[in-house]
Amino acid sequence: MQMDPWSTRTIDYEKLFTDFGIDRIGKLDEILSGNPLFRRGIIFGHRDFYQWWNDFRNGKKVSILTGMMPSGPFHLGHKMVVDQLVFYQNLGIPITLAIADVEARTVRKKTPDEIREITVNYLTNYFALGLDPKKTDVYMQTSRSVPYYRLASLMAGKVTFAEMEAIYGTLSPGKIASALIQAADILHKQLDGYEGKHRILVPVGPDQDPHIRLARDLAERIGLIKPSSTYHIFMKGLDGQKMSSSKPNSYISLDEPIEDALRKVKNALTGGRISLEEQKKLGGEPDKCMIFSLYLYHFELSDEELDNRRRMCESGKLICGDCKKELLDRIEKWLVDIHAKKVKYRPIAEKMVDEMMDYPF
Ligand code: TRP
Image 1: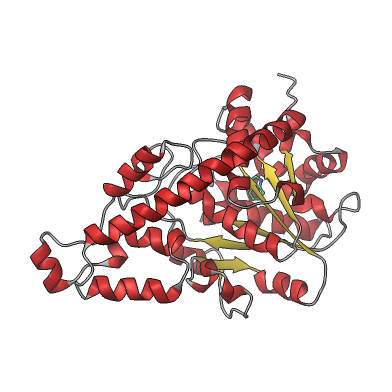
Image 2: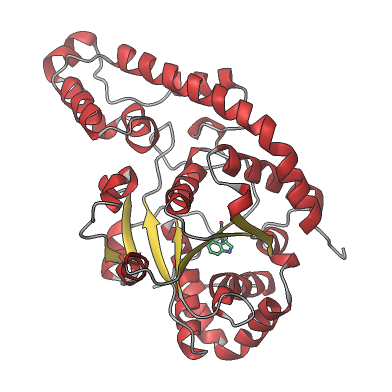
């Protein structure tokens, strides 16, 4: 059973539990249930999450590390990880963010100019969404320090080609380099040259689980604590299909003109019936509706309001036009605010990237 994080396939969530050994998120304490992503089951699975969380609750040292590959526009799908980082940062947990430029260059064949532009844009969005640039350790894979590279290269001797093929399927030199450097991302903070041994949580999408499995195996072989992870459900695209950077109409971007974003929402797939009459009789279908899922994932933080909206829809009292109109208003307000914040944060992101980017070719 392989799962290739670089090929875009749809995720079979059930298999993650049965074949890959991901555990379901279980009990939520009062802090975790304060977060809608946990409460609504959007963060659905994990590996050793509760060990990490208990260490945190017991006052032991813990931290968070995640990464992002600079490729494509920044959309609401990316926001889900940022929301999690902000949640943990507000609890006082140290956050490290790796920019996967090795992966972008070797696997996605992005040029240095593209990487600069996309990284500046991603970081600008991360900060506009509430991540504090002063409290986040941001680095690029090509510009970390010596112990990190020692770890990345020496781990090549701790795994066989067959094991890597079993995890990833077909490999290339670029993929092997990216996988080992991502394992170094996940593990290096436990080295003495950084923070020393402690539990680290890696919040990611389920497509990244192969990297988590490799890093956990390697951790055991080199005497580090196995990293913990959580996985969130990928929000569907506005058309009800897979959300994909190659289909601009499937996502709302935080980079595009607000009118464009709103037009896409207007055209999104709803759970409405063929006629108003039918809808009043049968009610709408919120679980098939992308407007409802936008409320669910991003734009309605109150469970009570969300339940109310579901009931009103299912009973045929709330019609799609009104429901959409309310969402459009919310999204417009929100985007105006985000765009203003982006103007403020862009110079900070530019400075960060300029200080990190240094390619020999
Ligand atoms: N591979 C990840 C992506 O495609 C980016 C990444 C690099 C990452 N290093 C990481 C994710 C470490 C989590 C942890 O976006």
